[in-house]
Amino acid sequence: MSREERFNAAMERQQAAVRECIAQASDERSLIVLLTGDGKGKTSSGFGMVFRALGYGQKVAVVQFIKGTQPSGEEIFLRERFPEIPFYQMGTGFTWDTQNFVADQAAARRTWEQALKLLQRDDLDLLLLDELTYMLAYKFLDEDEVLTALRERAPQLSVIVTGRGGGTALRELADTVSEVKNHKHAFDAGIKARKGVDY
Ligand code: ATP
Ligand code: MG
Image (cartoon, rainbow, N blue to C red; front, top):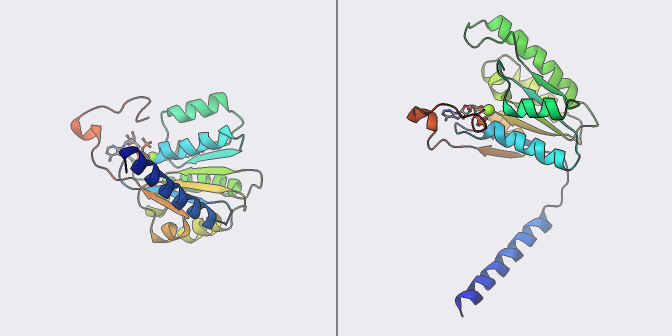
């Protein structure tokens, strides 16, 4: 067999295997995707799916459980070009620095109330809950309440959750779980966070 024939035969086998897998995936329903791990790429992957969904004309919403003093590129883009898209941030009142548990929990709670409403909407296709895992880790939100709301969401709605950790119950509930592993990060070599790459 020539190199070309071997290549073509291998491709045919691969194609048959892929077709077999596709044929076996017969369920069709909305998904929970968890993007976790200590490497860079969780939030940006989440927004990648948001933009992917927008490409098909789907309806999306974003809730970011971050302090948000400076708007990220994704936020600027969506707020300016798609002002109709629901976009909530924990924003002011959330103080990583001052260790004010009561104020932080209240801010998390207010933001979660927005997420709760979005989780029930029957006209949304995709909801990004960015950095939600930290709200569970810090016990700002009740894990049972969050998991129940995710489980009992509007049936057509897929949800992306990002952030390190998140706990085993969330991992079990999610349909797709990806862990981004940190091999190295430019920051550790003293390189400043880069506009358009890091934020
Ligand atoms: P991104 O928003 O780039 O997808 P992320 O959501 O995976 O990153 P976060 O933990 O939310 O990561 O942190 C966001 C910021 O922190 C980004 O500027 C990112 O480059 C930086 N960052 C992420 N992982 C690391 C790391 N392992 N070491 C240093 N900085 C990191
Ligand atoms: Mg992130």
